[in-house]
Amino acid sequence: MTKSPLFAALLTPHRSLSPQGIRWVIAFTCVMASIPGIAFYAMGAWPVVGLLGLDVLLLYWALTASLRDTEMFEEITLWPDALDIRHVTKKGRETALSFNPFFIRLSVVRDNEDRVTALKILTREGETEIGRFLTPDDKASFAEAFGHALSRAKR
View 1: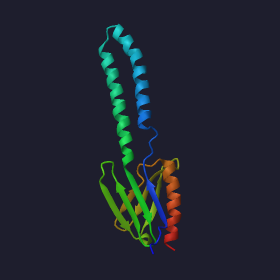
View 2: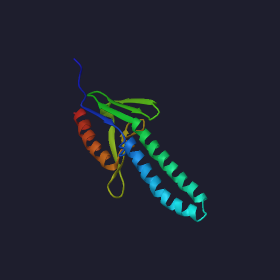
View 3: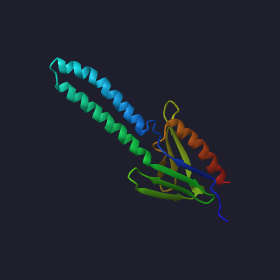
View 4: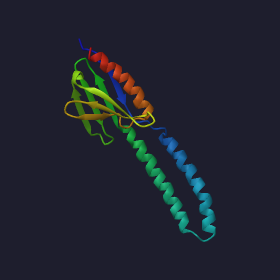
């Protein structure tokens, strides 16, 4: 009989734009950049057109780089006798850590406005940050759920 985990979560970065959304944003940006581009070209300031095109290319690069970040994730599983953390980067590099839940503590770091800025697993050997790519609201809700599960595991 396999035991079931006390808590399991798959943390992934949130991306609001799909590939189709990126195409729409770039198309809209091209149309909007062409309006001043045509005006500057007509006045004889044709180098401005190239700079506007460079802006569109940089925006496209930034949006596609952001979309590639969705391939990263963290898998956190709390068993009665172990906490397993598996982190996979966008390039596919994997790091796996395992801790005894009786010897760890969840540290929630907050800023001056009481927003959660970091979640850390504290051990005798050091600390490990989890959910680095989550928004402050997502970090807060994860910390609450994980904190309850961790306290149940220590009973």
